[in-house]
Amino acid sequence: MTLNSPINATLQKGATAFGFWLTLPSSALAKTILHGSSGSSTSFQWVLIDAEHGLISDNHYYDLTNAIGSEGASPIVRVPSAEEWMIKRALDAGAHGVMTPMCHTETDAANIVKFAKYPPLGSRGYGPMFAPHAFPGVSGSDYDESSQQTLVAVQIESPQGVENVEKIAKVAGVDVLFIGPFDLSKQMGVTRGGPEHEAAIQRALTAAHAANKKAAIFCTDGNDALARAKQGFDMISVNTDVGVLRTGMLNELNIASERSTDTGN
Ligand code: 3PY
Ligand code: MG
Image (cartoon, rainbow, N blue to C red; front, top):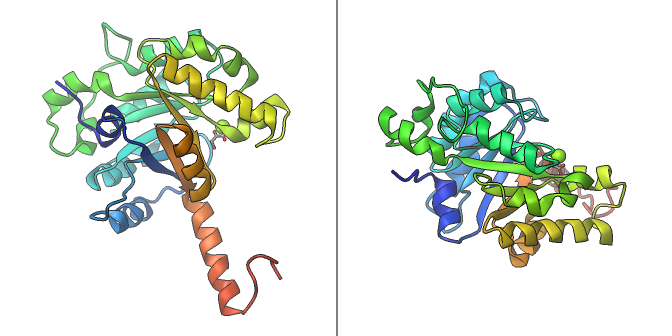
């Protein structure tokens, strides 16, 4: 049976899937953002639950995946590292997909797929008592079958990852190449947004599409996200919870105190 998660459904029909980054362990915050856009013509299809950076750890996964799933978006967990037990715990808590940092080689990618799939495709251990709760309308037995289709996203964010990106893209079971622009620039030792950085990003985009896979990227605001959508990225993080809260609150303070947001006076 087909896993009709919001992220899979959006990507399968060829639409751009917009999401945002959650760094705070607050299901109320995630629901507030998602509920605010429900019913409007634009809404988020996914939320990245960031357990690599930020304040989220694995005891928060279950509440967050359920809150996000109940609002019609897909919770994707970025695990701290591409380890089997971390991927298993994220999926068992109801993630509609997992993302792993720093995928450098096709061997890394093949292992990530293996950890995310039950036999015969992989080695995921069996114990999904709580996982179906984050998939509205999906029963336990439906989950057993369809969870082989939970999304696997690997991050391309190192020179080695870029060097091997064509081979990584071809690994069966890798659904998405997700570019981490900040680490990519730091690991390459180049300026973010400079020509070498941009060339690496475009190489990953081309490699993903040549292998019939999806390309994704982290953006810093709506304009950045729009530009990446126009370039053909399929899955785009528009902003982060803390980024928007900080900017929004400071803007309001600047208005209240008659200060210009541009000058920072
Ligand atoms: C990066 O930019 O390095 C990411 O992983 C996304 O924030
Ligand atoms: Mg990164």
